[in-house]
Length: 462
Figure (cartoon, rainbow, N blue to C red):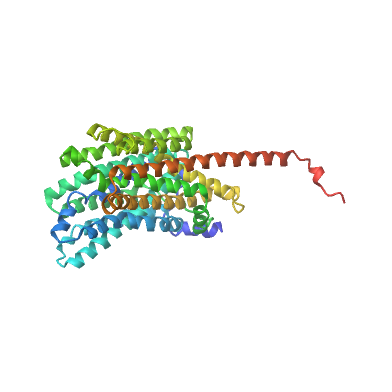
């Protein structure tokens, strides 16, 4: 078994390096490169926002078709991330990373030339197709980034993933203004050529600086994923990730119309949205560091209930009688960003810890295989986590647009409904924590009783 696995690694054409043998300097370089990749991924996702709807309108593209083009990116990440998590131990994490970066960079550059297509139907079809291909590349690179961070920094997963979260938030913040500036400077092609070329350069740097990590898969990834997807802990944490991203995404189609009575200019509305990302980005490293030291659950539970309060005041909820004002909105969004970081940053680390505990309790696992199985866990959990994030990104605008437009439900009631959904997650995580502690207590007492039994008393009499 070991020989066959070793031969697989040898066939990759480069000697693998154990994560524990990587120097601190090289670990820092790896974290910086992965953070830049996260920044570029989210920037490319948000790049279209300021100018593509106008271009689509000029090309007589319907609003539904424009929404479909935007949603293809996260939807393909949702579909492909679990598959990538299963395949990664066979392909190698480094290969998966730079393949995703190169693929997305090529598709991004290609997207800039799509206006050359004259036919309306072909133009829309290729926009959807290329956007979907970008999502596939992003799924590979993001899933590989999470798995690599977990493998290289196993003792500070929440802290290091919080760094990725910060750069991801910066990408969302910088994408729209960067796209608008480049569009004004050089037309439709320039934003995609610049961002695609930047990703291409980073892909070359990844090939040179990031070593190949061992990906020995003694535990079948597909069977491990099926095992994890039925675990209550994985289900509840995944639900928390989905609801958190939904709480962000529902604001995209609803917050701007809600602010019309304040008569804000477009730049001012942009700064209002910026307050949410700023609160999240600034506080993410703090909560990542603290949750690594003091445990994940207190921050997740308290963060969920703090998000609930923030969303109720953001509406404001019908039973909270305060007038709509810019101070009320901005302060609520900043609080929402901070509380989302408190709850969201430990999600991945908690999910990973649950997967490790699940495999450790499996009858098929053994002490000698634990180190080798670690990367399989990182790979599979990264796929599940990436799928949950993308599903929340897809559902958020759909929920916000459907309730406020199709159903004529006010922003206040929509925010209240999302708030109670977040509170439900907090309650579920609290119950899960109580159940796990009680189960561990019962299990430890049972094991102690077994150890206290005299072996001679249990031996057969005859």
